[in-house]
Length: 388
Image (tube, rainbow, N blue to C red; front, side, top):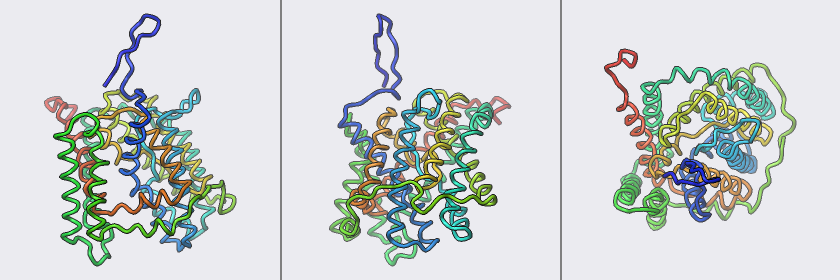
């Protein structure tokens, strides 16, 4: 939606990406974005912590630091940093890069946590500096390429949703049980029905309402466990260099820099996908701002004992499905993430959402991403030899 404004007698168009919604809607839509990406956001600290044999208190600290930094990174990307030209100012939520998991584990086992954070800081700085040069490659991304990338992103995420649908943990006794799969189907059906037959505000929060339906069903079925809420602390403040000053190992820096190069490609695909959805052409300068935000957020992640950061594809589907294109909605999600990072009990409530419930939402979201890519490909003129 675009609305007309009159400034000094001249009509100007306000793009829907810059629309500021009422506070209540910002919170509800923002919460919906947080729920869509939460499982992916906490997966990285869970995997890294288990592989490095960290204590429970260290794991909790990692999760809190990650959520808080996710929020900071999202605010940088959606609101920008003014004259220094950082942040693309479109509805992109930031999360920790999955590509960094294996290198972080290897670095941590060989050199410890301080070497992980040293390599993250340097890789973030290099990403920031390389962004303008990498962005020049955008001209090699015509619609046939961008459509293919968007479709691949959606298709590559669908197996994650399928795993959630089965219960999330393949080693669990009830993995892929009829009860879990049935719950996933009910959540997916609820989302599709709400989106298809409801109008206005209700259809735009179909994912959130579908998750609520799933949670309410999961509790009597014994598929929801909220015991972690009782064990979680009330407040946890993330402090810089909590595990000591960073150390710098050349091999670790090289491997983390390669991770960031992969993340730059991922961010490029997500930026182009959102640009297609919100009908905003992406320029090399826009891409530079987005990648600089990734780089700066990654530096902050290293300082705050967190991870490398990149744009999350999960939320691309949510923008497409709901049609809510305001970047301030995602900025509100960033604020919510920061609050969750400061108050572990709130984070534990979100973490208690059963995997099959997330699976139903994931199938809707990731399928929408793939459909968006196919829609882009449908506009390609394949009779042009340059597109074959």
